[in-house]
Image 1 (cartoon, rainbow, N blue to C red):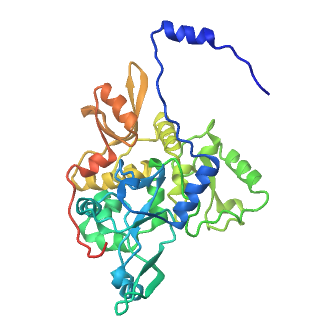
Image 2 (image 1 turned 60 degrees about the vertical axis):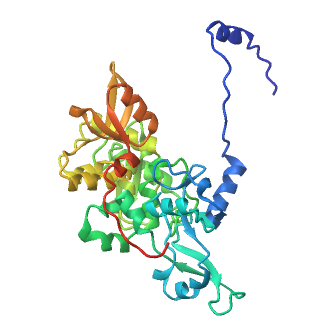
Image 3 (image 1 turned 180 degrees about the vertical axis):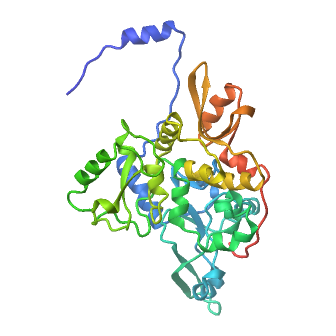
Length: 380
């Protein structure tokens, strides 16, 4: 149906206010275009330089998606890499010093960007004795240690004694979930993720169980009345067809994603912020120790918390709202109100809190402050 609406009165009012025309750029990523991007990243997209990669938050992204980056062409080293994956090029998950070195040297080597989280990557090269013979295969390779160090992932940089353990148990699914707050989209497929085994009556079972718990998270205690979709029902034994009430537990989305083997869960940043606000309003958001701080905070700032804990900083407040004339103007992931300092994920929060007299750093800026210790790893 065609609508005929006369906007002349509105336009005249705008002109009287002295407002002019502005140009806006709308990036349409829904529908077919979104599907194309998803497929490209899942299958791997070859790029010839790093200008296609955004690194504003220190993480690697492409058109709103979190990605990882690796060099597919191993040249004459491909045979050794296929035999021993430790000799293969590492993949990158952050804008680490090794990538910066590659930029400076203009050595881009046809990187592949992908969000396939299986951990296995196709590599190519040539026979070491016959360079006309191409060799290819698929192997499981390791994450770049510079990246872990840069992000202080899991306390990698601040806990020297645990470095090997953190590196060995690194999991791509968990890593992408940890930083999901930075990205509007999630990968179409997580390695091992399958949500297709719920019983036919699961929706009603879930609603009934959550209602019986008054929509209160059984882990952190936050009441989600009015925000019922933020409360999930967790299968304790991991068997999705076992709906025995003794096997069920009502958990807010934040507590749910922190359960073992739930690394594939994506929690939007706005949802995480709202849960943090509800906890604080209900007197549940106070971190009395560092374990509380880790349990209550967005996993995206855990690297910072490990760093601050090692430096004997004061425990920050979690999910703090900055107010100006009794109006909430910004949400901080971590805050030290007495000194008006804090950490934000969203640049808009940084700007609005700054106007209210706060000193705010984004996560990347805070991680780069003292850029922790360097690591060494041979192949990239």
